[in-house]
Length: 224
Image (tube, rainbow, N blue to C red):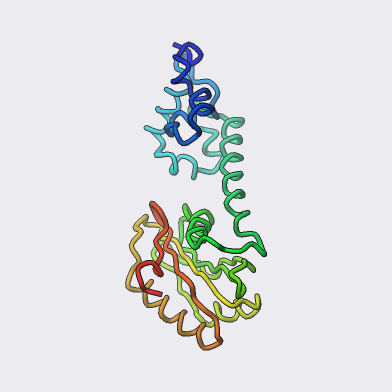
């Protein structure tokens, strides 16, 4: 049965319009971008098969467009559409932390670090620099390492914070292994950074660990 022959309340487009995009499953959202399915199958069935074989959703969308284009049911045009939709989402989130924007929601920084660092094959340590009103001054990826870790130099974080004329800093790094739990080394680096920044009257507001699931805030754990 073609999707247009489904009951109106079960069709992805009608369901989205009536109940909002949050009411759709991953397969239904993906089906909206596919438009149609493989021969003999509707778009939702094709989307379910893609997710079952090449998913889950994040693993599927983390693939580079040329790799997406080679998957059955996609091809270059649909791969480009998915990559463009993902980038739009990234830029929407990034716009919350444009230079000069006030960081009123601390968790927005965590989402921003997750958007920038999740899916990297190696560990990346980055910093978000803020003024005394918690307005974003800049974001920099400062250190890159292996799949197991990146060496962090507090002196360089301080130097870049002073270059931005920052009053506060939020840092974050990813765990390519997917394990969200901060390690003992993560806690030690946080303590060293806090101490080094305090020497020049700069505040370390938080340290986020990005992996599978929501980013982990070391400040929320009482470790900053």
